[in-house]
Each structure stands twice: as structure tokens, then as C-alpha cells.
Image (tube, rainbow, N blue to C red; front, side, top):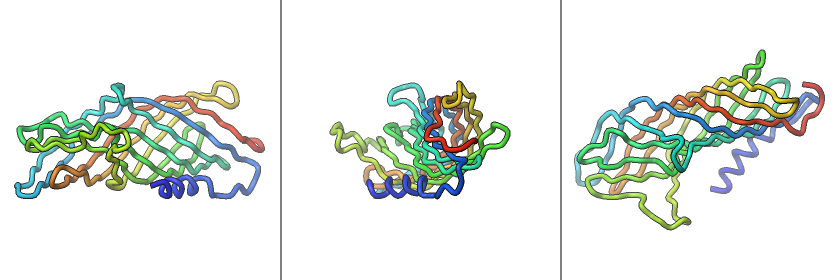
Length: 220
């Protein structure tokens, strides 16, 4: 796992600076997420598959809260970025068979983005993986109930893509407030007791945060 994160980070920073117009940026956000209803399929050994349209809440401001962190390297109004989002899913429309289905310690999204800026508006698209921590109770069988901190049960569970538009509002030459709207589209294969599930998620994120430019060289 450490090797995976190292590869993603090095991908972000390994593009050479070929002229003086460059800088780094770092941003921290919170915000609200809206999830579209999507198909959910749950398979358990010895039982028929469960299939229905799942409705999820993200409970963005309830612990553990939603957050988004992004590190970018800008050159000539274009950037390579490394982004991590702590997204969460809580099944709203539970059933007698599906008593709980949450990914609440993180439907974590880890991505590399390509961005560019035009007339003070920043556009970005990215791709990466979902690192999920599932908790469920299916037909009375509970999964992900460990209370041991070192046994948190995180799994690389599928791909994700990202589309976003943002507007930084500068406070001086280095610091800014960033307002952003983004869409993430993800698929995850989530474990349950004696089986697994297919989880699709299309989410709309409205986020607000603080950013800083640093290690500037030349004139942007």
C-alpha cells in the first residue's frame, strides 16, 4: 500500500519544469455531497442475489466528516495534482434483508488530476481508485465491526473518475478561498459476510476551502 501511494505522489511531481512560470498549490476543503440513486447488487453464498436501487446519504458534517485535500504543481496555467477525498456512503432505504450497508470510515477517493486555468476559472479531470472501509449487516450477518484501530479493514475496491470546476478568490498574492463543484463516478466491489457487492456511485460535491501557492518561480 505504501508503494501505491508513493507511485501516485511521484506521478504528480515528476513532470519537469521547463521554464520559470511555475508554482505549487495546496488546498484543504470541506463541503456537502449529493448522491444519485444507483443499482446495488449483493451476493452471499447460499442465498439468492439481492438487487435494488440504493439511495445513499453522506452525512458530510457528522464525524468522521467529509474532507478533500489536494496538492498541485502548476506551470503555464496547467497542473498535475494529487487529490484525496474522504467520501462516505450510508444506505437510506434499508430492507429486512439489508439491515445496514455503509461505507462510512471512508469511500475514500484517491486520484491524479490534470487541470488548467482560464480567466480565473480552474477546470480539472482525474482518475484513480476507491479505498473503501465497508460496514454492513446482511441477513443478520455483520461485516466490518472491528474495534481494533490497526484492523480498520480498508480495501482497494474499484476505479473512479472526476470532473471539476473551481474559482479561487485570492487574499493577497499567496492565499485564497477556493469554491468548487465536482462530480465523481465510481464503481466498487465491496465485501460482505460470505460474499461481495457491486456498488455504483455518482456524486455531486459542493466544496469550499482554503488554498495556498508556494515555491513560486517567475511571474505567473
